[in-house]
Amino acid sequence: MTTSQFLLSAWTFNPLVAIGSWAALAWYLGAYRLAPRAGWFFAGIVLLALTLLSPLNLLAQGCLFSAHMAQHIVLLLLVPGLLLLGLPARAARPGRRRGFLVPAAGWLGGMGAMWFWHVPVLCNAAANSPMVHGLQTVSLLALGCLFWWPILSPTETDRLFPPAAVVYLGGACFACSLLGIIITLSPVPVCSIFTMPRPDDAAITQMIQLRWGLTPEKDQQIGGLLMWVPMCLVYFAAILAQVARWFAEPAIAVKEQT
Image 1: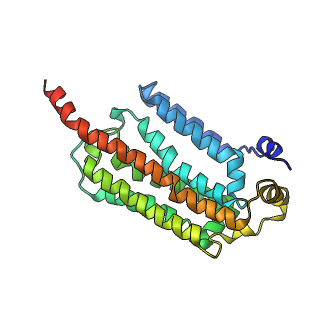
Image 2 (image 1 turned 180 degrees about the horizontal axis):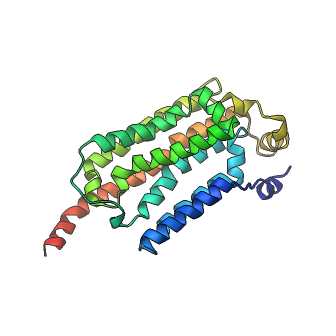
Image 3 (image 1 turned 180 degrees about the vertical axis):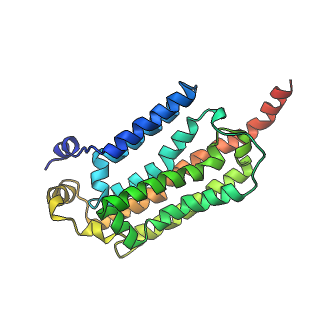
């Protein structure tokens, strides 16, 4: 199998993904119509569908550990972030700040999801069982939204103050970097199922090893590096946005007073 053949033939149709995506779009249009930030929400839904229906999803289910890791990054960070960016201010109920309860739950949920799903037995189960993979997908999306809520909530009162947000995001970068380093340098497979391809995936495995030059060891190292570097780049970009927000707040306050 060539790479071109694989990229053209490995698309799948999942009715649950299709129905869920269309239902989310219908809900948004019914509730908010074409709000000014609707493009962000639509982009999140499109990215979600591509992640779960494209060849990436097939590779992530027992063929390529680095594809599995890339899918995790999209489901936990990118899609939830885009969905929350697309919500208009009226989507959340303004109120007083809720202390550290929600941010603590968001941080522990987001970071816990990555560590939890890389316990070897759970990682193997998610790659081998469609039901467990579906549960994993839902949990990553839900916990990703919980993680981003204190940063990207549509209402200012639900967001962390910029200094606290920087600490929140910096801690997340550290936690993911630590796990990424462990995976990259681990002398044993983190998810052994990716080193023992199923007979049905023999053609894909041959393509990965012969045409792409990826051994299971290199594949795991790339997966660890994906968690280590790209994830922290996402956090770093969010930290820069919080610093910009911090410096802009006095100007915004003065403008509102005048």
